[in-house]
Image (cartoon, rainbow, N blue to C red; front, side, top):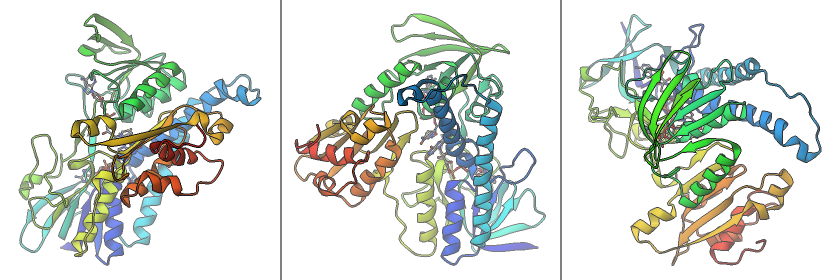
Length: 474
Ligand code: FAD
Ligand code: NAI
């Protein structure tokens, strides 16, 4: 006996569950399989993003920011609080309940959209000209799929020779579940996870040292933004060292010893209570039995796809972290929707030039499109305008005036080529930039749009005016 589906989606992370819902909206008979489980064994759909990624990290960032504000900034507003203390158990349990709400939300959405959900590990069995056969670990019968989307995501990259034990040597998972605030915390990798999780634990009281191999800080961002970010985050107390060469990392039980060469080549020793390893993630295809159907996987472990997320096999697609491109939830979702639409013959499209990047530190950092370094390298003529939050009324009222908005436009056509923000709510402000760029708008377009006063978004308008050297408030 076997069940037949128009589409089987493997993985219920943002790539998979969104693809399943969209395909069902388009009239397909859809199943989605995911193996993630809660501690009690119940299904926990939502993937890395919901369970150990975007959602729990933002819950901890929010809670730790409240703690930081109560400790250091309420006073500026004339609010006197004394004996602020931390109930870490409650803080973590709040984070867990936020995650659970999201898991349950996805199960509800599956029901609402008539997506059949199967909880278990999916593996390929065989492929013939009509069907792909898939086994689910929890089922006796097999699933027969006319189409398959693989959305199996990624997992944390281990530091060579150093196993995650999630007690002392932590991946993103352990970093979200530390039981007592460590006195000292080491982080390897000053990327997105290093900065976000480093910020959480610093705010909660850890002495955090981040070791980064690259010669400069946040090299993917516009260099003006990176400079400002390094200055602000260092001032907050994050000890960030770039250009380090790690010689040895040893888990010595209750602590970790690190020997590294500093930027100036001097050898340093660091002893920390715990260490977070955040040196990137690796695509996940273990358990899929990809060779049974001849699915192409490259030497780095990514499923090989073309621009349309098509694999080497007819009717088999792959989206999200398990394929090339940025490892971001919204990128996975866009690909999932586009593939569902392509399966029914529509022209789903993902614009890689307008995928925003956000780092949820305080201040937040967000950008879309090209930065100055890239444009210089391309030899493209551009003009840039910036506006500091210091000159924005709403930012002053908030008491959060760090950072600026920078807009880069084509020197001749004025088309917006990139927008780079460091400052309060940058994650929300960047949406306007994405919209303008999606419509191939000009800086002048932003400058001529009426923005409510007083809002942070007026800084977007002012930066656009600054492109033409006619800021009104600076
Ligand atoms: P995943 O979310 O990894 O989901 C894959 C799913 O497939 C999992 O549930 C897994 O159990 C399941 N699976 C795998 N193999 C099988 C199998 N054989 N059978 C059945 N099920 C299987 N991105 C952002 O855009 N914004 C953020 O703020 C953000 N924060 C992050 C914070 C952290 C700490 C981390 C680690 C990541 C963060 N990301 C963020 C990245 C984001 O989580 C990923 O890009 C996103 O989850 C990728 O979605 P996906 O659907 O491709 O894979
Ligand atoms: P990352 O790619 O952002 O950063 C890894 C950093 O580690 C890089 O700066 C790299 O130079 C450094 N590194 C690598 N090897 C090293 C070594 N041996 N010694 C010292 N430094 C070393 O990866 P990260 O932070 O692990 O995050 C993984 C993925 O998760 C990212 O691709 C990101 O897209 C996603 N993510 C997104 C978030 C968001 O959108 N806000 C939040 C967290 C994660």
